[in-house]
Every structure is written in C-alpha cells, then in structure tokens.
Amino acid sequence: MKNTRNKKTVYCLCEAALMIALAVVFSLLRFPPFRIDLWANGGSIDFVMIPIIILGWRRGPLWAMPAGLILGLLECLIGGGIGWGLPSVLLDYVLAYGAVGCAGFFRNKKWGLFAG
Image (cartoon, helix red, strand yellow):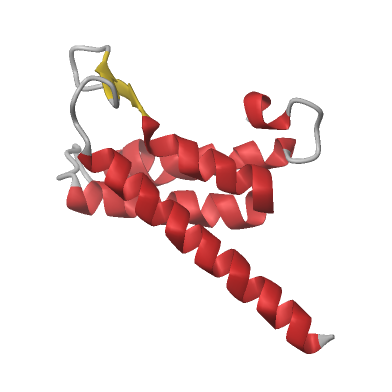
C-alpha cells in the first residue's frame, strides 16, 4: 500500500516538473503564433498557461497551484520580471500563475478542461 502511494506521488511530481519545463519552453517562444501582444504595457496571451491547466485537469488543484507558483517564480527570474517592488512582482507573476492552477477545481466536471 505504501509503495503504490509513493509511486503515484513520484509520478505526479515528475508530471508537474515536465509541465513546468514545457511552460518555460513556451515562454521562450516569442514569435506570433505562440504569443499575441494585446496591450501597450506588455500584456499578452500566450501558450504558457496551457500546461498548468492540463496539469490541473489531470491531477487537481493541489498539484497545479504549487506548479503555477513555481512557474511564476521561474518566469520572473528567467524572463526578466519587471515590477515596482516585491508586492508588484508577487502579484504579477507568482500569484497570477498560481491562480491558473485553480483550473484543477473543474477536474471532475463535464466540460472541466474548457471551463478551467
């Protein structure tokens, strides 16, 4: 019993790490099919959030929200996050990507992937 639980935890951890890595790769792709710049101050829509949404759909919010927090921290560090201070950086990157992990709350719903 304990061995199967540990094995599932390791699988979930590896899947979360792979989804974070895939999201970081998507964040480095800056040409138009992967990123659409909408707002003058730097806002955009891109594919970075898709792996975290899929992780939330597969494993639930307990795995997707920490993965989103880690992705936000990595996105800030690798992408050169700009903010007016620590609260601005935390809200713009860490908390925002962590909120994407809330898609896991729609895990067992009929249209859960699309609702998330």
